[in-house]
Figure 1 (cartoon, helix red, strand yellow):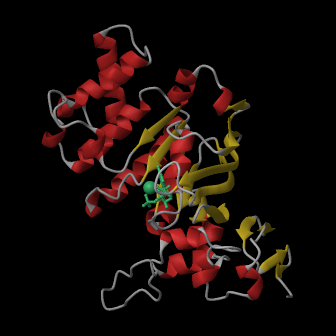
Figure 2: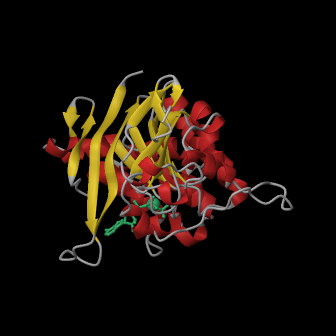
Amino acid sequence: MSTILKANNLTKIFSLGGLLSRTKITAVDHVSFTVESSEIFTLAGESGCGKSTTARMILGFEIPTSGELHYLDQNIQSVKDKKAWFKEVQAVFQNPFESFNPLRKVESYFFETVNNFHLEKNEKRAEQLIEEKLQAVGLTYHEIAGKYPGELSGGQLQRSSIARSLLTNPSLLIADEPVSMVDASLRMSIVNLFREMRDSFGVSVIYITHDLATAYYISDRIAIMFRGNIVETGSVEEVLGNPKHPYTKLLIESIPQPDPHQQPKTLIKFLEEKEEYLRKGCKFSGRCPEVMDICKKITPKDVLIDGVMVKCHLFKTNTGKSEE
Ligand SMILES: Nc1ncnc2c1ncn2[C@@H]1O[C@H](COP(=O)(O)OP(=O)(O)OP(=O)(O)O)[C@@H](O)[C@H]1O
Ligand SMILES: [Mg+2]
């Protein structure tokens, strides 16, 4: 395995209420992580924790306030040939009905990508390439030819979106909540496609979700985000199987139970998002069941325990809990 993407202290500050507003939130706060070749790396956390902003910086839609992004040995921000970068990194978004204009035929998106990146020289070859990628996601060209987005199901449209993202043979796919708008019965089959892409084409995937069940199923490694920080990151088995950070524990306990009579043990209370973003010390201290005095004053540092990075004052050394 080799590192293909490295985020180093990646930070994005937004002014709330317009550019001249004095209230600023650090939507992504000195976030560091790596994505290895052929791995599924998940960014998970509840709404408004900075997952999409992180993705948007990688995709070049937002400029980082500070920090760096490296693809292989290159700093992405200083890459002159942006097109080469956009060929390597492709995106799949949440709502397939928003990704496709209802008045444009679905196939036109495929031909547009082929033309933009000069992938094939003539229409026949382009069609072969499109067919190949559609087949990789369980569709055929015949099924989409001549159709408008409204004539396909949500599942078919999201598969089309994934097929289109594969046209350039990217090394990294960024999938931001790719199944949350897809019918629950189809979710697993679509999520499975990312595993197939990893295994067949060696593609790495940044999978963004608030759904820990699919994350557990497909991820190699996972990072749990809370209000702009990665609070815990490591292998998915370790982080979700043996959670250390109180926030990770809370998220796991909040997964709805299949039995409708059994309520989740803890329901996440949505506090004012801004209030948490602006909180001093640990941003989770306002609702942490294990909060200590220090948490309200000092931002915890990252501590490595058993291969898992945890950002929490409960942990000080490699031997486990703090003696304070
Ligand atoms: N352009 C913007 N201007 C101001 N604030 C923004 C902007 N984009 C995002 N934010 C704020 O940054 C924070 C993180 O937002 P982000 O969209 O990255 O969260 P998320 O984890 O993707 O959430 P969700 O699960 O709801 O998609 C939120 O408080 C959001 O309101
Ligand atoms: Mg988002």
